[in-house]
Image (cartoon, rainbow, N blue to C red; front, side, top):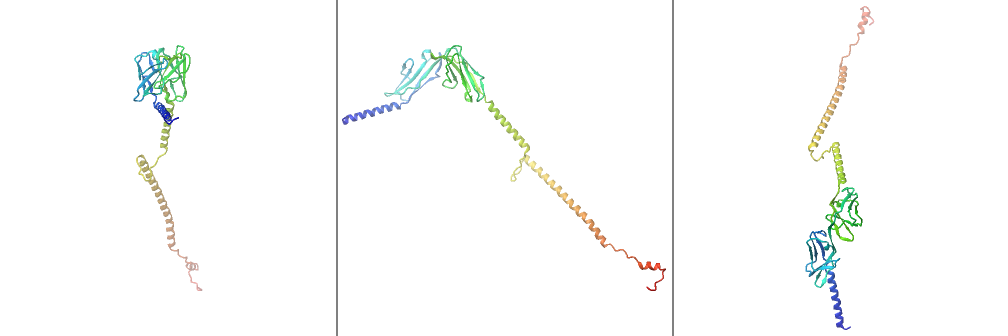
Amino acid sequence: MSPTMAAFFCLGLCLGQVIQAQKGLLPKPSLQARPGSLVPLGKPVTISCQGPPGADLYRLEELISRKYLDQAELSISAMEQRFVGRYRCSYQSGTTWSPPSNQLELVATGVFTKPSLSAQPSTAVAPGADVTLRCHSQYGFDQFALYKEGDTGPYKTPERWYQADFPITTVTAAHSGTYQCYSFSSSSPYLWSAPSDPLELVVTEFSEASKKLNHSLVNEVATTETSRNITILPKESDPPTGLAFQYYTRSNLVRICLGAVVLILLVGLLAEDWHSRKKPLTHRVRAVHRPLPPLPQTQKSHSCQDGGQPDDHN
């Protein structure tokens, strides 16, 4: 291979890689229906394809009929059965087409009589409990769809005849809301009945609220009983205030009075003891200083007995 041919071959490979890279860089567009993809018969709807700025051409396709329109929007003034089906779109930038968008299913509702929706055992459910939403139709439809207000897609679409049960286990607060169900046939998947009457599912928080209430009541009673039995005195460094100050003053007065009574009793006991010891001491001193009795006169008595004559011998 000559150098010139080799250069052209490399250039072709590079251009091919650039083109493939450009194809991969184009993001896919988004397709949506306003106000929604479930459209009652006779109501308006607009299908819109959204791509990046600078797109040169949009193409809107209906996949079942294999028809397409080179435009970004399709406005339907009154919904008819011929407009139902699956749609997708793409756009062109330069010579490159973007990947197709996600498919949009356009459904006509109100084609058949509405079914009924009920909750078993009740529309009021405690958290953690189970509830079953039952959709029942008077016709032999084999398809049912349950929608919750605010959600974009169906909750479930089980295959049943005449009725379908939608069990919800371990209910939480997120399951609260308004529900409606539809019935249709698998042979005509885009022609649905009118929606059932709305059903309001309420998840009660009574059990949790009652637990909190009981807990708060128990705490309040315990606090009250503790405050009745325990008197908290202020710190030594802080001056007493309020009721604590009154209690503090009364306790000090009681202590002072008890101390004074004890002191008076001690002084009285000491005085009585001192007085009882002083009386015997004075009696003994007086007895010591009392004069002695006179001695008996033995000589006079003897001379009288002798007749009054002196004793010569003496």
